[in-house]
Image (cartoon, rainbow, N blue to C red; front, side, top):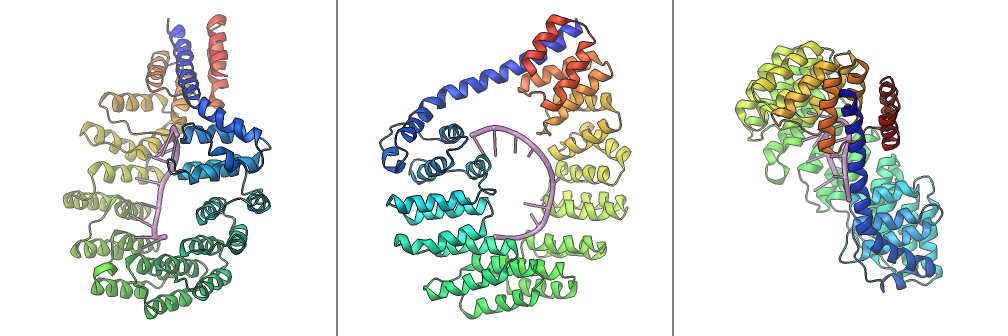
Length: 475
DNA sequence: GTAGGGTTAG
């Protein structure tokens, strides 16, 4: 009876999922079909004919057209992508930008970007600043600094003039690459065409100088930006402060922090500012100073958040001071800015990471008993570690309890597969069925690397007919 | 445009 159930649930879970996928394709296929058909018929100057298509444009449709262009029609795909992004009814999400880079391997084949721009030129296409911005965004996603610069330089040939946002995209790419010579050249160049570096340009440059170890240049720029009238704010201050902290000058950092507190207004340190200084103190093992800053931020009316607390907990657990971590949590919870669930979840995570699995498990159970909801990371990390130590059944019990009290946050999807495999291996068939049932309800599929091993175990049951179903359903 | 634990979907 149990054997029957396991196989059946695995089979069902796969088929429910497949049904959803088919359904989705059905609704998007017709639009995608129309757009793709037009692309095939008119490979030259596709933009002119795409406008004539009367079909709904949404992210599913865009993804489907892109997928159909695979392999080999990368230029067509990118041109469709750019055209779609220019339509007023639709906007690409960052996900779609990443998707197109991944599908057409834009990073590995940067020539794609250049070919598109050259094709626009050869076909005398109408190209706007917005078109160029989208191409620059693609370069940014694919981290193509040289190609982005090439696009920027190409703009005058289309009678277009780059704006500050476009310069910022290219400057960011060179800053990330650590090429501050080029970044600086571009920033100076802005002035020559009557563009003014804004606060974003300056923050990028300050961060770039700090990362490149050129702290004095970062400070110089910070002072200079005020001279030429760019109003500074807590983001610019924080970028500089972070650089100073990372260079190890903690006294200088505290001085600057004091300056920000004194200045107030837009320069007032915020939770990010304080947290970054706290993090530096923690990394240096200076926990007294780090905790002191928590009091200082509270006194200045800035409440700690989840990141602040987890940074301090990490520091305290790292030096073995778990008791102090508990005291800290009491204090923060009393302050009311971070929930007890978030605080104790961070502690569970750090206890696991500092090899105190027993303490972590105890705390985790206590949280459930007292109605404190653990977050997704705490669940994922403790489950994985317990499974690693062979405590498969304990994990199942915890999981079941969390499900029953409705406390489940999103956990890593591979946990289900690992746990099911563990339960099968240890012949806990009742629990395996229950887990399969939970998976079925949630539409969670088995992950490919575990399918074989689970099937192998089921084969021991020697129920050929059911095994066939599982085999066909899962592979 | 600033700190930063994991994944999910689009």
